[in-house]
Length: 496
Image 1 (cartoon, rainbow, N blue to C red):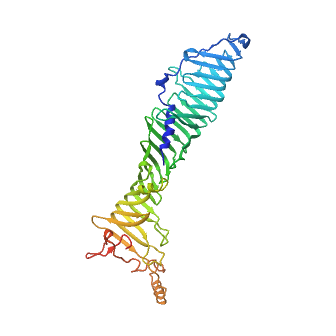
Image 2 (cartoon, rainbow, N blue to C red):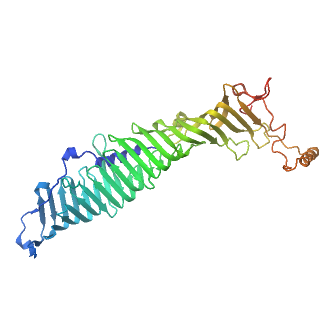
Image 3 (cartoon, rainbow, N blue to C red):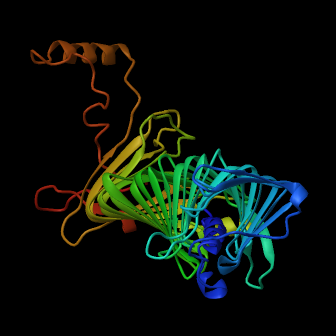
C-alpha cells in the first residue's frame, strides 16, 4: 500500500496553490483600457453607431495593451464593438499578464466585466509552470472590493502540473483531466465529471476533486479510487478520500464511507480508513466504524470494532484488533478434510507477522502469521490431525481462558497456550472409526429404537465415551478441567 506515491501527486497540486503571491505580487486588477499600437489606416475600418460609439475592424496584425494592468494582447485581427465594450480577437491570439499566459484561436474580452473568454485550442500557462489545455477557458480578472481572480474551463480540459525535486529539477508532470475545472485565486482548484489524475506510478480517479492549497487539503469525491502501479501496488477506495498535507509533506490519507484499502500484504475494509505517513512512507493504517473493521492477510481474517495495522517501511508487522475481535484461519488440512475454520475470539486480538523472514526471500513475498494473542474472554477452536491416521476427520480442541496464545510455524498452528489466573476450561474431541460389525450394527439400531419421542433416531456424530474423551496434554499447555474437587484430568490445548 505504497502511499508515498500519493505524496508526489499532492506535492504537484500544491505547486499550483503554493504562495506565488509572495514571488510575483498581487494579481493585476482594475479596469483595462486598451491602447493599440500603430494601426495602418489601410488595416482599419470603422462604423459610427447612433450612440456615437464606433464598431472597429482591424486586420493585418493587432497589438493591444493595458499598461496599468501589464496586459498585452496580440492577434491576427480584431473586432471591437463600442456599445458593448466588447473586443473579439481572431487568429493566433496571445494574451499575456504577470499571472497568466494564454494562447487560443479566438478570445473575447468583455471590458465592463473584466472577463475574457478563450476558445478553440486553448493553451494556458500558469506562473508555476503548470499548463492547462482544452477547448474553452473563461477567466475573470480580479477587481478590488468586488471579486477575486477565478477561471472556469469546460469541454474536458487537461492540466499538466509541474513538480520539482528537492534540488529544483523538473520531474515528470502530473496530468489532471476532468469535464469541468474551476480555479479560484492561487489556492483553490476544483474539478468535476470523471476526474482522472495520472502520473507514472499512480492513477487516481473520481467524479469530483477539490484542492485547498491554504489548508493542504486534497479531496476526491463520489466513487474515488487511488491506484499505485509501481513497486508494491495498492488500491484505496471510498465515497470520499481526503489527502492531508502540511508544509508540502503528506501526513494522512483518510477514506470515508465504504472504505477499502488493498495491498500486497493486507486487505482492510470498514466505514473509515485512516492511513498515517511518517517520513514519506506509510507507517500505520487505522480503520473503524459501525459496520466493524475487517482485515484479511494471507492466512488470517480478523473482524473487530476497530483495527490498527502497524507496518513500518510499508511491511506488515502487527495487527491490533479491538472490541469483540474474531480471528479465523484455514486449518492445516493436509491430513484431514473439513469445511470449518480455526477460530480465536477475545476482547482484543494482536497478530504478529514474520516481516523479517519475508524480506529475506524477496520484495514481493507476503509476511506470514507468527503469533496470535487473544486477551479478555478468550476462546480458541482448533482442528488438528486425528491420532488414527487412516481417518480424514479432524480432532477438535476448544479452550476458554483469560488469554490465549496461538503460535504458528510456516502458517500452520504449532501450539496453543492458555493463560488464566483462576480457572481455564477445555474440551478435546477425537474421532473414531464406526463399529461396522454385526454386533455394532445391532447395538446402533437398538439405540435408535430406544431414542425418546421427538428426538432423531440417527447415530451421534461422535460416539459417547469415545469422541469426547480427554487425553493428557503437554506441560506448557495443560489446562485444568472444571471437574469436582480432587485431581482433575488434563485437557490438551493441542493434540499430544
